[in-house]
Length: 156
Image 1: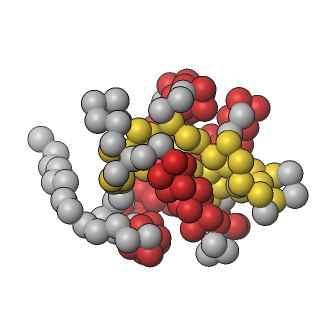
Image 2: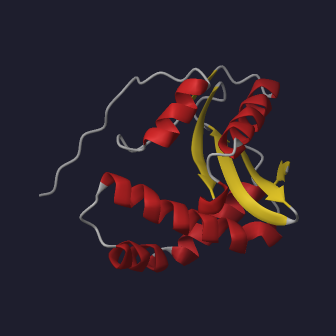
Image 3: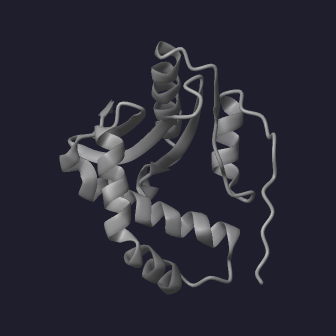
């Protein structure tokens, strides 16, 4: 297994992993939402999402990495140094193809992202996770993250 900076040619695979992982993530948090409904919403935003991934790959303030096994992209992660404060960053995504989860790939990605931030002398990093996404919460806690806020939402 190898980890490397993402390239534009990885966009299609990154997006496939993102869609599959988002469906799983949303279903954990909102079990009443149907897979079809989630897929429909994700399809609507595909063009914007690909544009965002492309921007992240080309940006100097983002570090989007992929993990490959036998030439196949099986996971990816992205971190962004904040424009308003270069000493702070946000891990925006760590997603793994379903059949490759629970094999240490998330930890490998986190190590790489945190190492990149340390080289840039970033002092703190945060990330947002759905409250019921226990695998992601466990991964962050493993790397010393602490819960510092809860975001509340309601329908009107």
